[in-house]
Image (cartoon, rainbow, N blue to C red; front, side, top):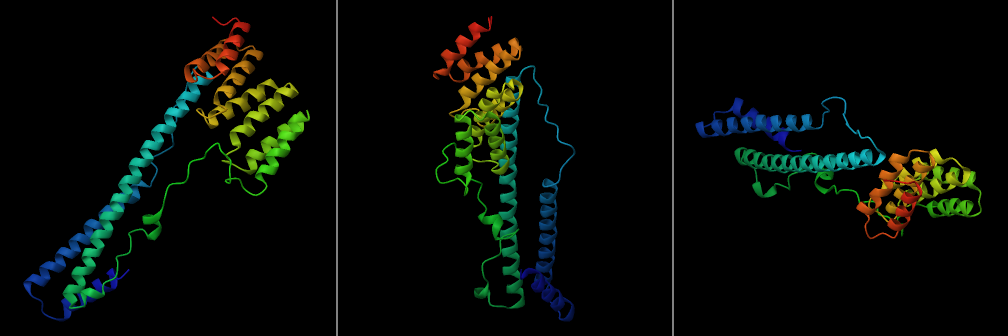
Length: 272
């Protein structure tokens, strides 16, 4: 950045040659603005510092209560992140404008050619000005899959279709470890639940269905994942939570065909 060499030159001129009252006042103004700018940068640094251990407060009597609490916390954090992003961008824009103004005034004081001033570098570097938010994860795999990702998922799916439940469960678990954030992650978690059900491991199957539902609580697999979770809770003799979970399907997905299946399961469990 040209700011600091120019400032050094201006101060050198101030000590070696007489200056008018107007020039001295202008240099004082510049020093004051630099101080203000430094304070703003320090404030920005404090925004990036933590204030202590995080406290989630994710409590609830049922699985659905905890999932709802997680969704609410994610929404709160997203809103806070957007607010801080706006404030950071505002500081960057203001700081960049001030630096450009200071450079202009210093060149003017030194008797330089103002027309030769280039574009002021963005405060924080070019990445700060051009950074864009990541693309949201979508259910449609399309062309977003990594090399071998579809092959690994298909291999796990085939193992499940062949009745090799242990192999399928292992493959689906490995898939989500190998490709975190994959567009197929929800499907992999759901299919892993099916494989674990095939092995008779109902408790782990319930956890897999919960992971599938939490992965996208409004996606194509959400209603079915919630049903399988409720049914699994029923098989684990957790009737109250099973009934609450199954009743939530009609509330969240009133037009889904899974509602009928869920009501039949509630009758089977003698839900109130």
